[in-house]
Amino acid sequence: MGKSEVLKTFQEVIEGPRNVYLDEWVRAGGKVMGYYCSYIPEEIFTAAGFLPYRIRGAGSEDSSDGDAYMSARVCTFVRHTISLALRGEFDFLDGVVLLQNCDHIRRAGDLFVKKVKLPFYSMLSVPRAPKERLFDWYLSELKRLKAEIEAHFGLTITDQKLEEAITLHNATRERIQRLYEMRKKDAPPITGEEALTVTIAAHLMPRDQFNASMDNLLADLENARVGDSYRARVIIIGGELDNPEYIAGIEQQGALSVAEVVCFGQRSFGELIPSGADDPLERIARHKFFQVPCARMVECFDDQVSVLKTTVREFSADGIIFQRMKFCDPWAGDGHNLYWRMKEEGIPFLGLEREYLVPSSGQVKTRVQAFLEQMGK
Image (cartoon, rainbow, N blue to C red):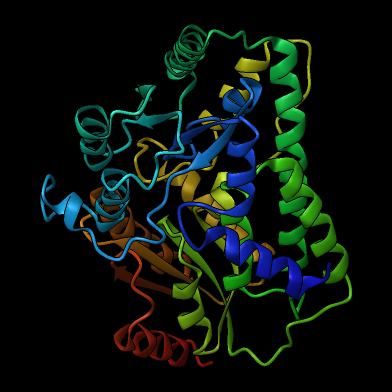
């Protein structure tokens, strides 16, 4: 399979709640565990024999069912996902794990318990600062989750199974890293729209099948090139972003996305989990807790800035486009702070607000065009 065939397969995977790989897994008697956030380790689900499934709102035509129970000031990402859940679109899930990363997700948790009523439910509490003094709190939450899964489903998640899960998910990380390395070229072999399609698909299908498809894609990309007709190279950052069409609208203006530091993008993978003789669950926890921090975390803004500066340099980016979901309070604060810090650093910065499942509007395209002109591109 070449680039076009693999990308077509991944596009079909991300179009709606279900996909052929998921359906095959379920028909074979496999269990599926849904989750929302990258601070929730997929390795625990894999070690339990489940297919980890990251919940999205793709396939939702409106959020009316969610609107009936939620404030209009809850972000449309949550309202669309809950609408799908209330309509039975996630009935293939054997359970769901949520995290107290924002009030909107917490309200989603209430509805999963009261209205959706899946067989298994758990809510994790995660500290607000990625500091060593708080790590034991996070680790204890993962131990509790592991024990709850074992008790509810009558199984044992051994250290060996956790090690095997680490190996499998590290194989995915290695392939994503290779993909991103290729994007550092003057003429990257893949667009931002295509790259986001790839990383989204990784969250929705068995990892061994995803990894095999990635091998085909990477082999085809070795000598491929998109071309160098773009006007500028940009990094797209911010919170939840899982609709590649939004990036497509930006790239159509000549702003090629060379990295996406967003949920469902680079932030979901990170470096490899190291091997070692110590507790595998602790190594998994450290990898997640000390990942590139998102806006829900405090006392680490300088770390976020440092990562962004490094990413801009390594990918030869001309500027940063920050996007956030309307009514997302954590990212609203971060967007303000990042604007002023990037101005101090001399890095061009554009802030955009959007709604879920809405492609780039004429206004967004006009602002991107103006941004490129301001950079002299």
